[in-house]
Length: 324
Ligand code: COA
Image 1 (cartoon, protein in one colour):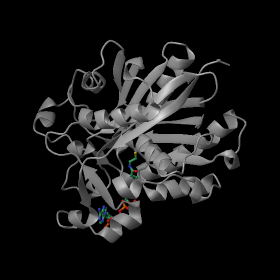
Image 2 (tube, helix red, strand yellow):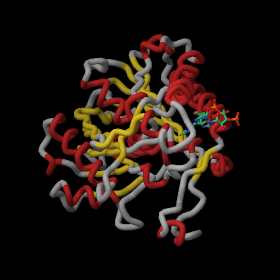
Image 3 (cartoon, helix red, strand yellow):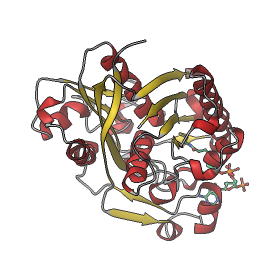
């Protein structure tokens, strides 16, 4: 086993100012607050302002994470942004955030694994650290998902929101991250996707008509089974059982998915970090956002054993088991 571990030493998050409540959506699509809360647990979502981009959200979360870590920002030697909604086709959002932070020279790149993007990014960070290729990584999950939502489609528009969360992960001789693993299966592409892009249909992008399509029922079933299985496998691989976990920070897509995972793991809901009511599904931002909220309100404490797990379009999924 490596002598080096990735350890989270700072977190931050950011939500755009504009909050859209379920009551507001009732005025624009055929839905009700009761339906949205009962089926998803979501009460509101934050939506980026015109001219506010993923890199702006990412920058705010990153600045807060750097401040809370106490490191000098010039010590950052790797920047990863997990996003599905980059500012531009290129350059990467990570390089844009790098410039906004006044940094230059260190490696900076984006990771695209939709809602599992942050777990993918943390897996990469941990491997950089274990191979002694990086000492202080900045990892951000940031999305302006509202830009790829059809606001007339009630089956998707009530579920998603914008936001960002960030972490500083430092190389340390004590864990830190015990283990991380990531997976994908592209056979499920059409259950959750934006069916146009740069190479296939640039006109849709140009006209702002590249929207998320989802077969919600099927995604729901896969999300519950896959996240329950990955949690159980991660615990098995680390010779642990669920009772040893202090917290699970699952992808925040739907309270019913989170409840079902807790049930399958025989974990009380009190051990599940749940923030989906406040910001909806923010895709790659949801895990670091939830983590930052829960550590700021005192739920997550130093020394806690925490399981992060993500699931997203592709499908993509993964987990990170760590000591905070
Ligand atoms: N308001 C009111 N009714 C709605 C609605 C809305 N916003 N969206 C859909 N409905 C209707 C449907 O049209 C359907 O009506 P019908 O029975 O007349 O056809 C009915 O509600 C039930 O739809 P269904 O899709 O079966 O509901 P559900 O219980 O599966 O809940 C989701 C829908 C989308 C909330 C749920 O499937 C889900 O959360 N799926 C996973 C989504 C997800 O997490 N995706 C991201 C993963 S990273």
